[in-house]
Image (cartoon, rainbow, N blue to C red; front, side):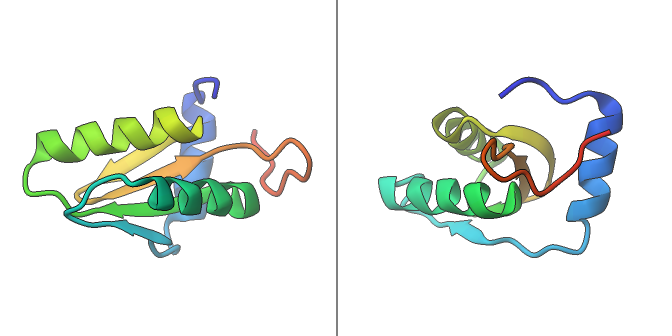
Length: 98
């Protein structure tokens, strides 16, 4: 996924503000099933929130980076345990980016 410009990130943050996390990553970490669910949600919604429950910040960072790499998603923002991800659906785009 190409990097998002600051105006695009601002727009996506505003759209994601009222959304709730769709997928929750627990202590077992990033599993193939959780990656499949995230990929499916990204294909349908394009913009999702993922809650990553990890004990420390470093573990959260590693898990979020692994999710982004495996799903080819761009990290819009992360606040605490929640990461906002975006991936354009080329077949049926739902979100217009500035």
